[in-house]
Image (tube, rainbow, N blue to C red; front, top):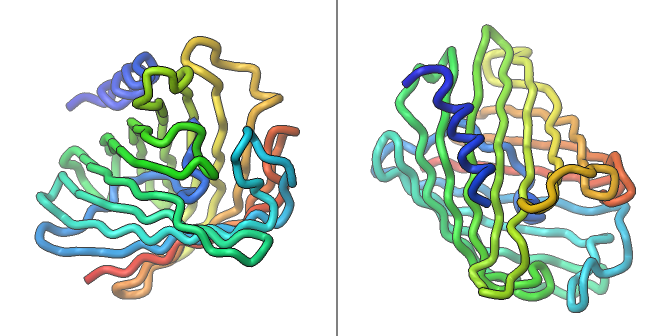
Length: 251
């Protein structure tokens, strides 16, 4: 596979159909579970400063909402991984909610895991409560590309989200990016950016859409991984301060 393949993949995905799901603030990389093994990622995030108003009728406002999303995954082959999410939240009124579930399939092409470029694709299908999604059934196609150069890592995801409902509205696009530096063998520090790009029919005009920038750290402790970050919105359409942590367990 040539170096142009990942770029072609991302452009193709953009032509097909995005907001990263609020329960999952993560840039996808090339990490895969070994065949026959299982893992669990616990996604946590808290919107400390956000709009108290709903984004649409029936939506739950983000402000002071804590989201807890366990993600279970299984290594099918060295390049193929299956996963499942359970969406839950704890709102500012101290009430707990189960907001839906998702299934995913992730593919990453064979590559050198220590240096050089990698690419892949992740496909998700899920049903969500109206409190977190205007339409119940939705899918996402995520293009994955990255490169390791010495201690530096750069990765980009291009996400295409759409509803399975015939009247679910236009498909939307989002880009997620990660730029990190390895300060030690087991720890990286860097920045993550999550930007809405608008609808497929009318991309651009970022000023009114969500743009979040996170300072993040990644650490590995034997069979446990941690990704933690503090994010700040850059536009009027963004949340204010958001705290996130993803704790991964490998079995």
